[in-house]
Length: 223
Image (cartoon, rainbow, N blue to C red; front, top):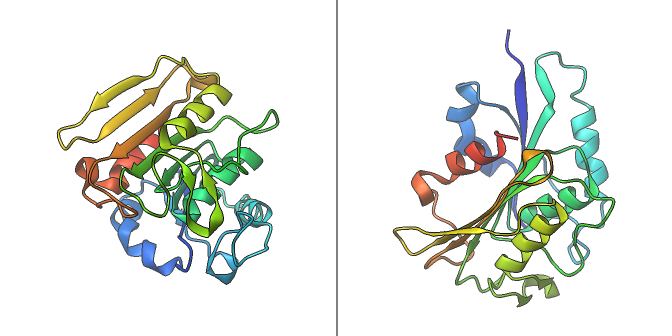
């Protein structure tokens, strides 16, 4: 009798989808969403400098298309969680696909080769980045695999400008010293939110902000 949203969860480089299923079992079993756990070719997502040369936007859209015939799936509510290389793929889906209305990118910002353009959609964006990340430097510059990353602040601002948000961001310092930056008033009522997580590297605690999974789901599911 219900119609469920879809959550695509994208693993990091060298990862595989099996590692994520148990993390979301409780939410899936509670009827929050149907979990989709795709595997990237060569255990990576093709961001231009990876082991894979697959067209991953086309692949993930094909997975979504294969689910259109199921009456109990709400294909108007497709979301993405991405981690590391998978977060880079989430940004890529934001720039190349209109299939997903919101995404959460954990420990990866936009790169200089992956910037939203005039033909890109306007997804709501949640970035969660470690301030001490050696692979994806928070302040921007060259990082893992030779990618040149925008700083966390610039990445969020780029999405906010593209999405037509009110550019007066609201900054909030959390009890642990982390900083939350929020842009609202975006096209279609969307938001762009960035977390600069204090004392964190390329791994965000599952307990961050009371629970990382719930934090991300509570954000994307509003769009």
